[in-house]
Length: 223
Image 1 (cartoon, one colour):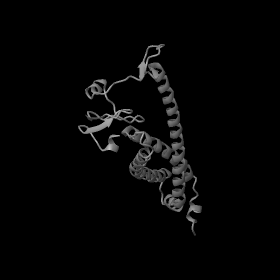
Image 2: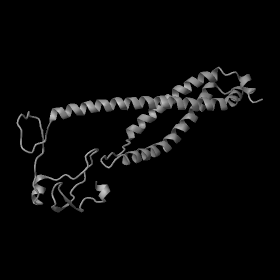
Image 3: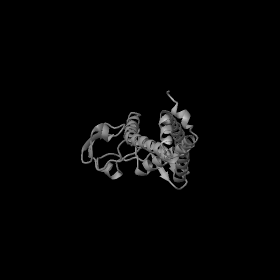
Image 4: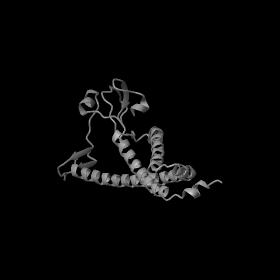
């Protein structure tokens, strides 16, 4: 709401309570962020200072309420909210692990295809280098270095682009939601370690292909 109104801490806003025609002005003391509840939070004392009537419509409690109170439309219990939050977190974690699994599979497919393409394009060069006395281990390191270069370049380009895309998607979802993408250093390191492990596994696979490479057949390619 602060972004939509273009206001900040210290600014004066003019508003009226729903159902009331009385307009009042108040100074913004703080700005809070909530993913799904957008609006203005005012203390009962501030409402009294503004000459507005504070009426309780909901109760949040840890005790059992078995009486009907005038004006109370809903009662929320601490334990129910905790249980609901836990169930939501469990569902989110399942979704997160599914996304991580699909991301690893996607990385495996992409890196395998890149490695296979590089191997096929360099097959003759690899055969030539083996004839000149290069060991299979040295050639495997060469492919691994190339894969690491792709990973570093892809990370430097992908992280800011992905952050911008995520920010655009979340900001355009609805004015009722406020979600800020957060990419921590731990997330980046964890992702890099996963991609690095996948790349090492693929290079181990291609190292066997390099060892079994027929140098004569490789040198006859494109002839």
